[in-house]
Length: 272
Image 1: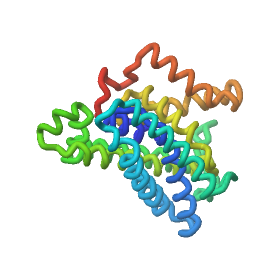
Image 2: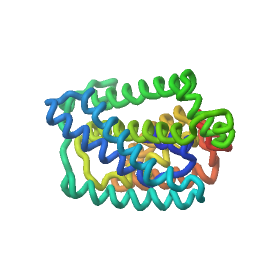
Image 3: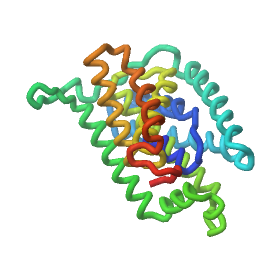
């Protein structure tokens, strides 16, 4: 989730409030794909990516593109409005009840001493690690990635050099939303359940992980999300499950006070 958020912050240049709902739509698309394909996980991930990619294009057309010549707060308010609309639409389309994601690994695990590691956890980690490697290569080695980096650094200078800034923002936001869709499917697989209203808390955790790892840093976002998960589980083990969500807010406040740029971030929000 945080990797997608990091790309949006780097390319679009503002905090979005609609990313949680993008994750929800990707999760439900993957859920129904799993049911129809009888457990094809790869197809479910691709379907979640495709659905959220399309939604990312819609978000760009509604919230970002019409307000580029105005203040950032206008686009920010637009994402809030679209978030409310998509959240209500999700309840109409998917129902208000929790859906139980099929368990592809049948709750199997292996043990390392006293530590039990589920196959689902290994699968999620492997997918995220692979995506990080792929994205780093795209960002650093391809024309598309270099265009995204140029736009994240200075949109006016990028336009003067002949780059189509609007197209770069459109594709960058779509890519970020597509990754959000994959994260929604992985989230459902991990917890074996998804809900139309889970977007708000997930977006908050994604933003916290992004700030923790460093704004605009793809690797930092992944590390931030990993560490946030560790801290949350420590809170559950030492206190109770009710403190899980509080940890994200406490970490966000602490990072903003101690090191606003995050673990691997820079002073400016640049994609790296």
